[in-house]
Amino acid sequence: MTRMAHAFWLESPGRGAIRDVELPAPGADEVLVRTLFTGVSRGTETLVFGGRVPENQYTAMRAPFQEGDFPGPVKYGYLNVGVVEEGPGTLVGRTVFCLYPHQTRYVVPAAAVTPVPPEVPAGRAVLAGTVETAVNALWDAAPLVGDRITVVGGGMVGCSVAALLARFPGVRVELVDADPARAQVAGALGVGFASPADALGDRDLVVHASATEAGLARSLELLRPEGTVVELSWYGDRRVALPLGEAFHSRRLTLRGSQVGTVSPARGATRTYADRLALALDLLADPALDALVSGESAFGELPDVMPRLAFGDLPALCHRIRYDREATGA
Image 1 (cartoon, one colour):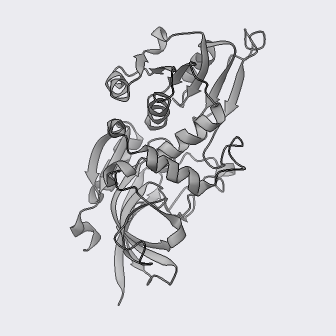
Image 2 (cartoon, helix red, strand yellow):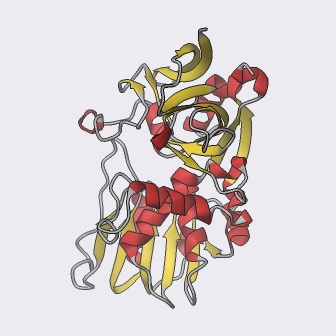
Image 3 (cartoon, one colour):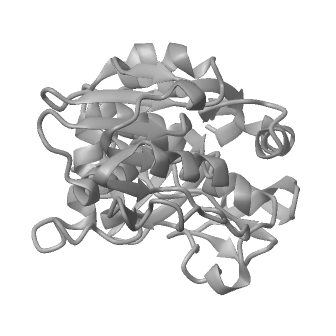
């Protein structure tokens, strides 16, 4: 019996559509998952939707279950939470997270799904991929007890980093964003908030996640001598100019890149990708992280919603996509 599903595809930069998909029968070591929620990553995913992946990054930017190629047509995404309908008995009926695109049902190897802890709601678990990025960033940054830390950029990644830093003993965290509405999110996460002009200086560590040239320059300005900026932004095909003259050398500042494609060298010998994702899911037991989900739409609305997210008409942190049983063919 042929089983059908529906998937969201980027047909060409700026234009998406829902396609029918024929599902294979799951093999002995595979699972059939019915999607409950997906999340739209407003950083990477909207750059993909706008056709702004540099050609020399096509290979590095491939998602684990991507189909098609950049700039399109391509099926892209990696924040998927669903329930296992068929597969090994230990997984059937379990809610799982998978780095899978926006699709109503799918078949993947059982090893590709991670069970969601019972105390984590499925709707919050879509944040796992972003919290995993924050975990890796903090392994890179290695904050210390009592540090003065600023996070510049109050998007999904920046807010996730701020939320985890708020748990560190004695750490004074300030979230900096040009949008005053982010103050409410900062409050929900238990951290301070400031506009770029009013941000506190003399910081031990600044984590930059605004994906703007001005934000990165301001991050350097906020450091104490010998402080470090950890750069999480991905700029796609944009060039960035920085003030590396002035006092950059005399103050002995450090600018360090971090990205989730590799487990941080600080933990690479002792942690796997699976360990890192499982930790991110455990951390999502904190209900404060619900503040990062700022909107929701039905799966069938994705062709209209994605352009609005990509081009700023629909402001959001994580925009969650809901899969009703009618849409999944249940």
